[in-house]
Length: 168
Image 1: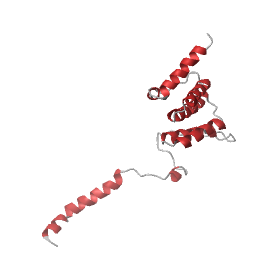
Image 2: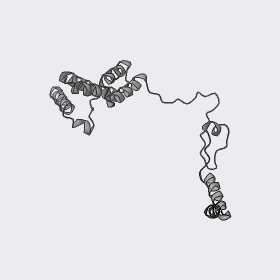
Image 3: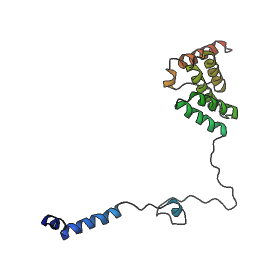
Image 4: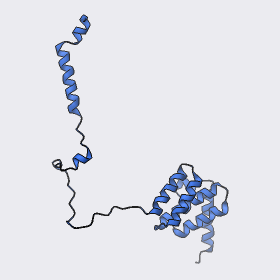
């Protein structure tokens, strides 16, 4: 070996290198696999423990979305991905499956209105906005949506028309 290599491998440097490598192993916390963590290990001091359900009680209910709600979310995702034909089928499918919440019904009709509005079918667009307002009379577009040059004016005209025909 040359003198340069020997001086680099001097005992103080080797010791410092070994010490640094040992510290790296200590610096990051150990990560336990979830299955091992749940298999009877004690919680850390001060950790909050969930209360156990009484024996014989049914398991806690996890909030699940209905098939209609799931289909609506898929339809909205398809719409956002620019897949309007797929989105239209899924959103209509959500309505056919049944959406319990009036807000979800109005939302479904809003997306159907958007799809038909951009395809130039003004009457269908207005009809979908009518259905959205029938489901939720307080239905409003988001501010960014309301400024759209096609469906913003379409919804405003539907609302104006409804206001004229509303009994006083």
